[in-house]
Every structure is written in structure tokens, then in C-alpha cells.
Length: 257
Figure 1 (tube, rainbow, N blue to C red):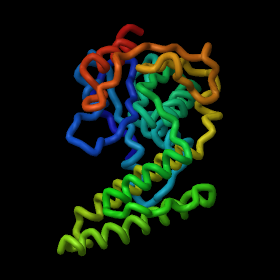
Figure 2 (figure 1 turned 120 degrees about the vertical axis):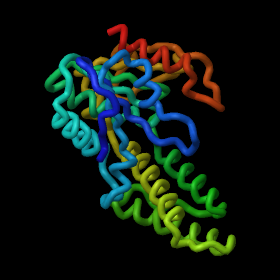
Figure 3 (figure 1 turned 90 degrees about the vertical axis):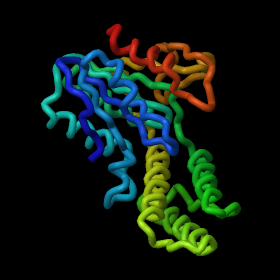
Figure 4 (figure 1 turned 45 degrees about the vertical axis):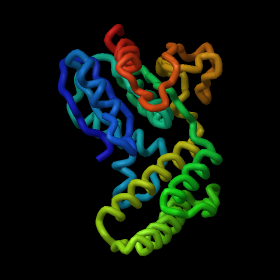
């Protein structure tokens, strides 16, 4: 399932596209619930959808699945707000554009990033290094995306098995399978973002607000600077990027509307 409702409310639903971080830090969607003043909050988790039978799903299809689930949940009335954190920005733009066909929708992008070829390659190298492989080349990204994801998965599987053997562990244990699935899902999502043109998400039918600590250099693919608003954030804290102050500024975009 790509979408689940975390909290009920009377009006103005909030959809939060975020991920389970590789840490014990709370998810953004959970932080929003505590301050959303009784609004219905939905968590959009593309990695959960990508951890099932399909190794690759395009951003447009992920957005369509999320909006489909949302429509079947008997959603509350009123304007919808779609929050996208980091690399989930593009997905949030697509979701907001689809929702805008039937209701007012606003995309709120928190420190948005737009994955590139180099970004996918660097992430693959980092994940491979986590498994002890320092010189593992990323597969070609311009071919069939489903095949590309499977190739990345198999390369990492070999490295994971080698790491387990070197530590005297059973490489077929469930924990290792879960780690590999998490790595595959993350790479598949970044590849989907890299492959997306944002032609649908940036069609000008939705309001877009960007919360960023680099207001002078922020961009939204497909939109000119006059087509989105900017809200400045405090300087990024690398140890805790989503501080209470950041969450308050984010939620203010919803509660003040």
C-alpha cells in the first residue's frame, strides 16, 4: 500500500510524502500529526509500494496509486495540502496536480531535491560501500528501468552475501533480505525521480510553496521563479534536519490557509 491514513479530521486533508529514514528519527508525517490541529493526515510511502512485486514504478504511476487510495478513503472536503520532503518533492507535485482536477490543491516542498543521474550513481556507490564494496560500478541507467533496478539489486545481493560470509553469518537471514529490499526500493525511487520530466506535476494548476534554507538558489523544474513561493528556513542542522522550528514553519503553511 502506498498510502495510509494516520489521523482523522473534518476538513482540509494533508498528504505527507516521506520515508522511513535510515535512523531512529521520527518520520515527518508523524511530526505533522501532532501539530495539524485535527486535520486528516495521510502518509504517502513510495518505498513501501516499491518493496512489493514490482521493482520499478514510474513517478506518475506512484502518484496515481496514491490518489486512487485517497479517493477510496472517503476523504474530507476542502483544499488538500501535499507535503513533499527532500526527494519526494517530484512525487508530491504529481499528486497535487492530480488532486487539483477535483479540488483545490497546494504542494508544499520541504528542502526539495531533484535526483539526477549522478545522484543515483552516488547513492548506489554509497550503499555498495556500506556492504564493503568500494569500487562497484552502477549499471547503465538509460535502459529499461525495471531491468536496471534488478541489476542493481543483484550486484548488491552478491556483495551482501560476501559480507555475511566474511562475518560468519547466514546471508539468507531475513534481516539481510529486508536490508536488500530497502536498498532496492530506495534506488528504484531515485531512478523514477531521475526519469521523470515533471511535465504533469509542474503544469501550473497547483499552488507551490518551497521551504528552503537556500532561498537564493532554489529551483522547481518546469516552473519559473514567479510560479512558486519561498519560505526561508533556518540554516540546516546536519544532525537533525527536521527540527521543531522547521516543523512549526511547515505546519504554519497549512494552518494559516
